[in-house]
Every structure is written in structure tokens, then in C-alpha cells.
Amino acid sequence: MAKAMSGQIPVKPDAEGLAASALAAQKGKGPAPVHLWNPPFNGDIDMRIARDGTWFYQNSPINREALVRLFASILRKDEDRYVLVTPVEMVGITVEDAPFVAINFEIKNAGLNQELEFETNVGDFATAGPENPIRVALDPQTGEPSPYVMIRAGLEARIDRKSFYRLIELGETQPLDGTDWFGIHSGGVFFPIISSQSLEI
Image (cartoon, rainbow, N blue to C red; front, side, top):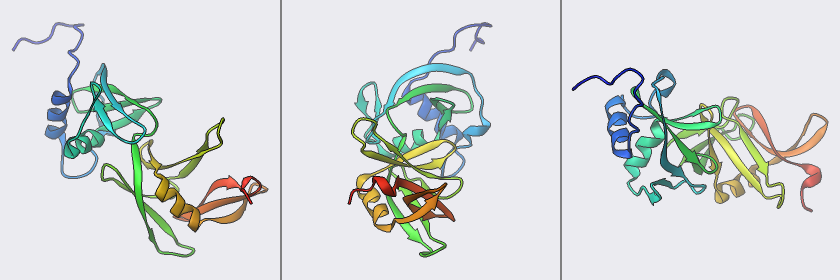
């Protein structure tokens, strides 16, 4: 096959091509070492992660769980852009909210050494702590909280409603920067959720 001419615009890969490249680059289980790869950017493709965690390609949901997990393993966040990365190509995708959803968590070492290990919809696990903080964003219009936990390298998971309710049950009040906050402990860190003054009585 002839080599591409210098300056030629690279062909934008499709989902099938990306999957093949990702499989070829996989080395065992877990996320691929995307931080080590710096291929040329091939533009955006019509792939989207909806707020509920569903992946779409050309407006059709990707129903194969193994394929979703494969794409999730090569997902990276570069500043404000989400990209799928293999050793030979990189494309941008759309993420409506957070790329993952935290669907459950387990409590380990209850008490002062409590750790909360979250599980995502794509099979990732992360323990909340200094490197994987929990944060809560409030809708500026409704005031409704949206909780998130960092999973890896800038990729967050939105904590689903049932898990958030469980977190609230574990919460406690603690002073922080001169203000009392209701929050949660994990991995030796206190993560504020809402100021005590804002709590409904």
C-alpha cells in the first residue's frame, strides 16, 4: 500500500476501526495506558455518552456491553475535550455530563479509617480519597445536587440517586474553613456536600 502523501488529511476512523485498534493495543484487563499515547488528532466522530451513561454511535445506542467497556478503556480527557485514544489514532466524542455513572459503592474499614469504593457502569472501581475526590454541584436554578466521584485521570462518574441517598445516611457535620458542613469521609478526607445552614430542617 502506498504511503500517504505529506500533509494529507488523515481518514477519520469509524467505531469498528477504533474497536479493532483498541483490541490490538489492549494488554490485559483494565484501562489502556492512554496517557502514554500521543497519536495525531483525527477530528470528532458521531459518538456520544448520554447523562445516564448510555453510549451512542450515530444516534443509535451501543448495546454490546463488551464494546462499551472497550471504548471506555481508551477514553481520555484532554483539558475540556474527551477523546478516544489508541497508539495510532485519536478522535473526539461528546459527553453530556460525566463519562461514567457510579452505580454502587462498598464501605471498607468503617469508622475513622472508612473507605468508600465505587463501582461504575463500565466495570471500573475507585476508592474515594485524595486522588479520587467526591464533589457535589448544585443546579443554579433548582438547587438540586449532582454528586460526582473521580474515577481516573480527570474522568468522573456521576453518583446515581440510590447511591447518593446511601451516602447521605453515612454523612456527618464537620467544620471546614470556619463553616459547618454536612459531608462524608473516605480515605482520610472529608468531602463537604452541603453547608449545615442550607440543610432543610
